[in-house]
Structure formats: structure tokens, C-alpha cells
Length: 251
Image (cartoon, rainbow, N blue to C red):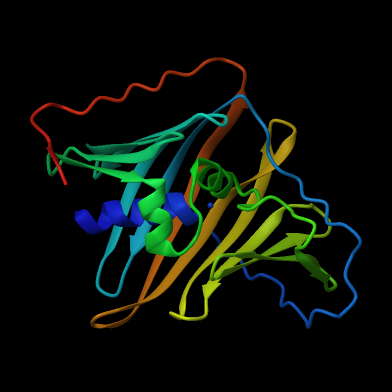
């Protein structure tokens, strides 16, 4: 069960599930576009329901999640395992808290320690952008850009990590994000697909996250798939009820 909650944390940090074949990208020519236009979803409140599937070398687990977001403020998730309430997640500007009702315990992660662990600057804005299929790092003047027939390419550096985003030229949506750390060989790959209108913007209803890292026992490859069945945005205020029972142990 601990591993499931770790996967949820990885999804939140890297996060959006793709069963379709994505067009092959050709070589990126030296010439770069003068600017890259990215369509990013905007809202006051968002509410959604999704199926999450976690896979490692030996097991597959499925979780149902209800997700609520208040823009630039808080992200809330209610998790169910096999129809039983399994836990909850609360993400705010200060920390990420994950509660396991099955194990009667909870975890609190601050962004400073998470950033050190992943060698990548992690904060609330990164988590929110990843969940929405937006750029996880805002565009900067010194970013490297390029293009091919189908995509604009944005390459950004954050510490020792290289972040490459591929933006569909037609829809202006981010379809792929690759994070690589050359020194460790660790990487995260995210594919967004099944874009549908949410409000006045397109939103990825499916995503595939592949996490590669080297452990003490050898290379590990984990995948996280999610598929939204519902996603809505609006101005109506949502409730974010979150309480940790006193009898739960902090881990």
C-alpha cells in the first residue's frame, strides 16, 4: 500500500493516458520558431473524476479518484480502492499530505525536501500545471526552441534536469513532456491525449506517465495511466473537506 501512495505522489509531481499511436517526430532542424504559442487551460474551480492504474514489475492496481482544484490555491483528491474509501490527498502552497485510511497513517511532504530528492524544483505551481497538461515550467527568454512537421519543441533546464515539451502545432496543446537527469540516468516521460473541450479550452482526458530510475536492486520502470470520465470548470465554489483522524500515525 505504501507503494501505491508513492505512485500517487509521483503522479502529482510529474503528472495527465494514451492508448493511441503518436506520430513519429523527425529530426529537429537548427531553425527555431520565433515564438511558441501554448494553449493552457484556465479556471477558478475544477472538478473531475478519473480512473488511475499503477503498474510496476510485478503488480497492477486500479484506483478511482475524485479531484477538485481551486486555481493557484489547493488540490484535493479522494481515493477509492475496490469500492472502499482508501485515502485522500491535499496539496497546497506549503506541502503535500497523503492519508491512507486502509493503513490508518498519513504522510506530509514539503517542497524543499521533494526538490532535493528529485533534483528538480517542485512547488505547487509545477504540480498544478502537470495535472492540467500545461507547461510545468513557464516559458523563459533563454529556453531552446525548435520544430518539425507536427510539433514545436521547447527545451528548458532546471538544475541538473532537462525538460523537453512538445506542443502540437495545430491545437497548441502540450502532448509530451520528457524529464531527464543525465548523471543518474533517471527519467520521466508523460504523454497527453484524448483532448476534449473543458470550458473554452482543450483538456487531456488521458495520459501515460513512465518513470525510470535506478534502485539498489537495479533499473525500475513504473507506469501510471489515468483516464478522466468527467472534467468541469467554473466559478462555483467547491468544498475541500480534509481531516486527519487523531488515531492515524504520521510516517
